[in-house]
Amino acid sequence: MSAQQNPPMPCVQTLLEALQWRARVTPQAILLKQAERTYSYQQVAQQVAQVGQQLRQQGVPRGERIGLLMHKTPAQVVGLLGCHDAGALFVLINPILHPHQIQHILQDCTMTHLMVDRRNYGLLERLDLPNSLQIYLVDEGLEGVDLPQSGCKPLLCDLTAPLPAAETRETVPITPWGDDLSHIIYTSGSTGLPKGIVATQRNLLEGGRIVSSYLKLQQWDRILALPPLNFDYGLNQLSCAIWSGATLVLHDFFLPNTLLKILQQERITILPALVPVWHKMLDEKLSSWIDSQEPLSDLRVITNTGSKMPLEMVERLRRRLPHVELYLMYGLTEAFRSTYLPPEELQRRPHSMGRAIPGVEIMVVDSAGKPTPIGEVGELVHRGALITRGYWNQPELSRQVFRPHPGLTAANRHLEQVVYSGDLVKQDADGYLYYIGRRDEMIKTKGYRVSPTEVETLAGQLDGVGEAVATAYEADGEIKLRLIVTLTDATVTAEQIKKQFKKAAPFYLIPDEICFLAQFPTTATGKTDRKAVIASSHP
Image (cartoon, rainbow, N blue to C red):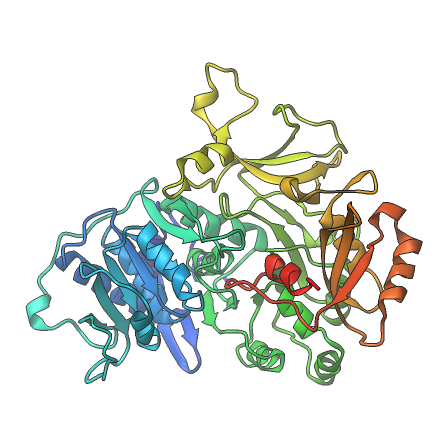
């Protein structure tokens, strides 16, 4: 495709600006597709302006926090960008969270405005909502809709209808800047109640630009949006689509064979997914089904983040889809994306988490903040692009994670902020990094400090083992090692797994106890829920 057909993005500061530019230059190009419905860049931009105008007419102040209790739909996309059009921050709330988690987010943000779609309107009955909270029902085809009795009287924003004449008066548009706040993204709550991380407009835009650059995204690409948008990995698919002019196909993962049909029917070229999805996709029955189908000839890129993809899984994907480039990526919500492993390095460095993404420097430092020698373990520190503003309402935690650059003099340290990840890594002479584990999850057993990740990586290479989580437990006054696994071969026993460990690992990495689960529970964002896995394994 020529440069004239897909002109380069001009200098813009926000994702909203990028959308508006796309709507002018390629108005009929498709931005969103869900089931049989398609939405052009022009249609989405017009609906975004409609939502933004309605918010401004309701007196939403600049910088206000607006919650979106919505599923992954075009209405959710329009709603979040409509917040930007009104100069507000969006806070995406995953509807599958427990009501007490949703309640916490609403209260933590001192939210006064909440968007909800028709599918989730009934959830409001399970929440203790303040009288001051203004509800907006944002969806399509709301004319004559019969709403449940929730005690709230929402303002309707029908995306398929023009604004009534009385409401078409123009309001002064608000133009966000790159340093303005964009959104608060809440973690899945695996360490307790969800905590909010505050991102800027530039964070959102630059994430799309940088990832699009190394994935080489083009206007003709079709990205399958599997992760929820309230997860930074999912939200980045929208940023990438708008930056590159691509199409984002919205789909919720339910059954592996349904996903395969979607990949074929929608001619998907870019597939982002988490490890739990691949475990379901690559079971033996489904693998046979894949082999019996036409190859996914349109698919050209698979990406993974959230947790390390086991080497055995990498090899199976490469065997079954040899024409597809596999990008393994690492990031943390506080700085979104830190590293990626180029596909051409997979064979040479199969255990690496990659190198720094463009615009980012990765430092590996010791407890005193000094650089560690090549090959020695230290904490990963992220410098450069994509660093967020810190935690919402948690200044002490922000000070622990968002710190001054360790290499600057005392007089200049305030000039630059970096993110201390809490992840232990080591770096080779070429700048490629290798994940060791979380600093606060190391296990002291048999006289050695053991990383759960190291044990899990070994387990993932054993015959018959699917997913794995390692943890500590106490017995007979000693700290011992427990391994929890799913199986790809139901005949494999704990004793057989231990025998394989003894051949591949030193004694201190051999689990003292092995537990089996049929499948691992996942968080609201689709990651393996380690706390739930460990809790399920308790005798």
